[in-house]
Image 1 (cartoon, one colour):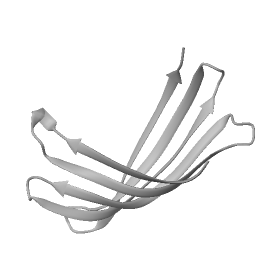
Image 2 (cartoon, rainbow, N blue to C red):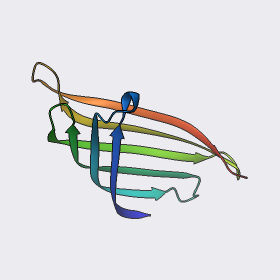
Image 3 (cartoon, helix red, strand yellow):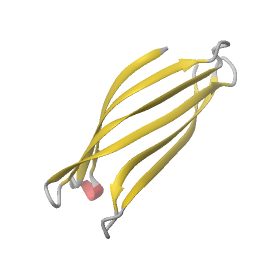
Image 4 (cartoon, helix red, strand yellow):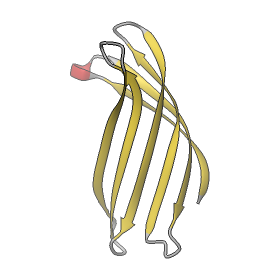
Length: 107
């Protein structure tokens, strides 16, 4: 548990052709509850968004918050909410949200 740095790059290849990439450089904190059944994290920082069509890179802000809960020794469920700043086609600021939920079974 404690602070961390996370650098993550994600590329986009629709129909097999590169269209862009986002590289997040985040500072975060992770921990667990005293019983150890729930793990959580929160992170945020700059995101460098490259678009191939304009060969341009914009700096945005991104963040994530997530948690996982142990159901038993073999099963846990997890979820994450993420957001990144952006500009819509009219030039107004917006936030693009994402989320995921899943289960992990170990054996």
